[in-house]
Image (cartoon, rainbow, N blue to C red; front, side):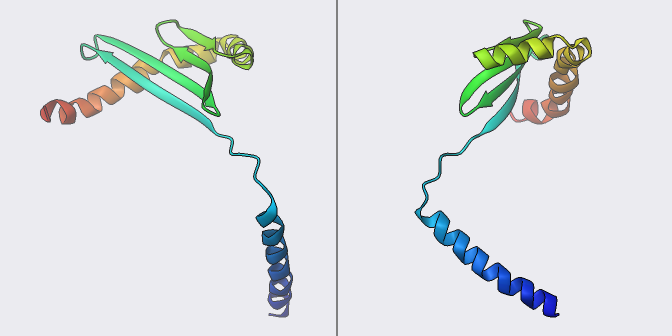
Length: 118
């Protein structure tokens, strides 16, 4: 029980000191990494396009388009990432299969709900 009290006694000044130091400091900003997967359906599942976008701080730096069949860099850094990812045949096969695995599969699961609501 004494250890808990001692830990609490040390924690309170650290929290107060940290809060007071942070109160006067201006934060440098928030960094955000985002990945978006999109399925574009044209005429049901007759024509399906899968797009996966990689975005850092609201700037898309690389994307995969199933119509193109490989990653495309949208910035200098994205070009390096695309070259690296495109060089792995297993990874690329997994990405290309996403049209069936992700898009068509989810379409079949959700189409009774969506079509029935028209």
